[in-house]
Image (cartoon, rainbow, N blue to C red; front, side, top):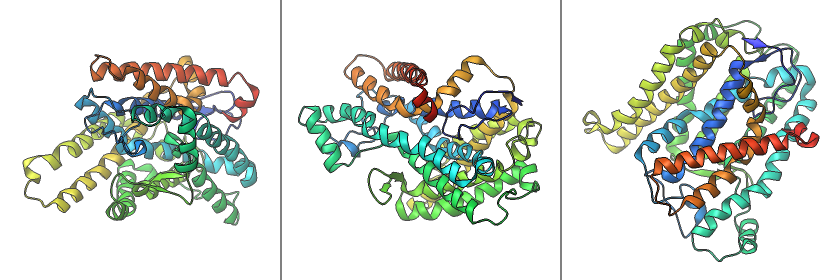
Length: 405
């Protein structure tokens, strides 16, 4: 369902153009994903797999690692990790092609450079060094921000943290803009008619499952699961084995959103929305299969490579099912705007840009406190979200930053 609105809110998924209507379900989905990002980073210090590398703080599993751990956070962290960045890229692609059609490639790229490129540079040079200084301090390095800054600039060449998503999204936007310029008759849609994939969510999910496997499995085999690489120069870091996977989800979003998000797969009255409860159930089942099956006796006879292959297949199944589950949930349930969520949506991009600073320093302040890991997580999450939200609202008071955010 859509409703009349002001210019498109500043977020990671579309340029700030004036639309006749806004899709409240997609708005609230991307706002929820932003909150999930804050929760994800708030919990990383308290997982059982957390590890701090005192010799090289940037090789730790998280910048801040607490001695208090809670295994449930492993479960929640891994659930997020399986799908939510893929879904963020998908949602980010939904509004790209209509934006190109309205303003052309030059205006689109100018807008993307302003809203993605400029914040990446500014935040990477200012807030990210301050955020990572918390990790520098607890790993026994020479005290003093000047020494840290010298190391950060000269040797480490800036660590972007969560901003990796921003520059990768900008790169994907540039790729689509080039495709748009290269197409004859580019004022037309990528495909004027709906396909059976868009009318049948199960078929669409099966096609996406196959495509994800083709893209992800070879990269996983070559690069491994957790590695990061540098694209040309620092600080352009990206998750090596998932780069192609994220591009695939982004392109899927561009294709689905080519003529608007109120038709085809994401139609408010479509099959995906009508059967949202089944898709959510499938999301839960698929993830628990990923958690349980590789670790039970049925997998015991398998060799290590075979068990790894099984886990990789279940990982992709969970990724696709969770993405479709969240799309179905928000399309099927969310139909009316809520003022406070509208405000969250308006501030979502700003929250994403600044939240890491508050997360890391809140975790740093809680080090050594006699609180359970769950309590520390909740404090970090609530404080970081509140301060990030407040900061975003303050930034929006300025006409300059309002154009960017």
